Image (tube, rainbow, N blue to C red; front, side):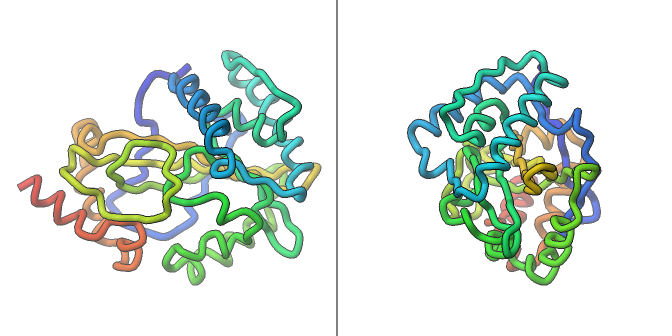
Length: 271
């Protein structure tokens, strides 16, 4: 398994930009396993036992696709991650069983009248509450995001409609928070408190794959979190690009992300 490192740095000198930012995904890179696998899988087990209504949501419309996803994940692990011990309880919902095998969270969207979230196992949400999303459309799920309806709604729905077995994608999303805990279902966003040394840089690596037999789409979310102060020491330009990204974001996006006043706090600490 991979050693500890922070594998993705989505900041850049161009500043904040609201875009899909899709990249082609090779199946060998679909699921990512590292030395935190045991720790995070145990955390998933604990959450499924103690907070199942918060981290698991399923509807009958997602059952066929869930069974297919379980098979795909097992096959991928056997092909590309043979070090992972595969143990499946077939009495469980197949998406839950699949989620117990990987560090990624799993969301299944199925098209009826439109694309809807029909099944999900989300143990490591970044400030969103799964029970409030199940059964909703893509537009409804992303409604709180400023500018989504005017900028990303049409291209996102168009992408889902044209996704097929030969086209899979991945993208990155990031934020700055004051809590390193992966499980953050609370939707209230506030500016990080304390100093930069108390803040964390959180990156979501998201993938999109078409599920051929059921025609569903699987959206996976893998989280990486590291202290912002450590990344500032390791990556040249990290602090400058972080500041530029925050300050170049529209005011309503800064409020949504909980970034109001953050750049000022960082600059005050650096001076």
